Length: 422
Image (tube, rainbow, N blue to C red; front, side):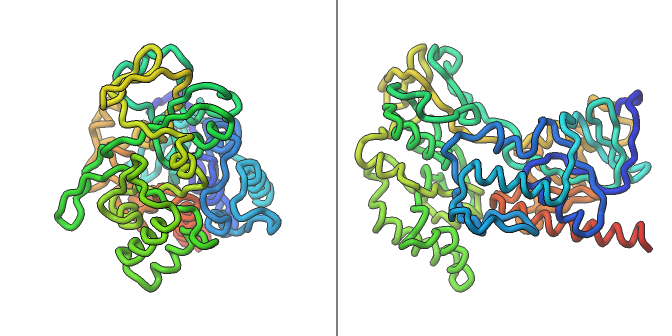
């Protein structure tokens, strides 16, 4: 760590990230009387929501599954709050619990100093020293840019969904959406509703091989489920059924209902994986798409499903089936990734800091080097060693983040009480 920084000792936990996960943890800590400090690299709360989301975005799950701890949504909010409604809820949450992060504080490096049993965290011109470190940067810290041949050749507009705002900006254009997750499907629908001519890449085979019960499965593209079945939230129905039935049985019921409502998706170029949506979510973290109308546009031909891209060209794309097509804009709905391993370090004694990224001891690893997620699976992925915690890495959205926040606050509060109030 750099020695000429001003050192600040803080008695409570340090939280990195002021998104929903970070502020939820802060509120839970405050409720238990534990002081905390939040470092946020941007200049606002929830930067992913405030700065990197499109206008028509709504919560994909009913609001009762998206509430943060200790504060419900206003009763007048609809079942699926809009982006602006959710941001207003976060603003009210921050005001209610008087959460005041240090903004513009990007963490460069954080590592545990075993000699003093404290964490050292560099941000700005300061080095914070604290007993507990809570990583709340979440699953969506950085955008994922795909490695597709010739991507720099395209002369039209190329943007990631993090920069996409509204379909009206592309009215009358031919647009290719690369990616068919929830964001890709919703962006394609928004474009179509605004008179764009939309094509969407749905890859023939996902680049993922899962070992499940000693068998290997290539995962065929994705599961599309209706957001509601018979007026009931598909997610809520799944949670209720799982209390009484095994995962495979619930999957079978969901797929039966989906087939009745949507029909055979394979007829329209979208194959289903070999295993059910809930089993797949548990095994590989791959979330099913909750359809809000996109599939009807696909069935009617208003949205064209195309195969994977072989390479980009100056005017469009060449697909793996050999077909070429020109586009005015290409929108990459290729998701986000964790950035934890770029700044969270474990350094062995006598190693120079420049070598610290090679100095992880296997028995001490918490975040995986490859994907930046906790190695321990849910529901035990929230606590590491030496006062290290993770919130918002469960692949279970806001509900998982809220569960993590409560557990972390309770754990630290118990330690705080024994250490400082004994």
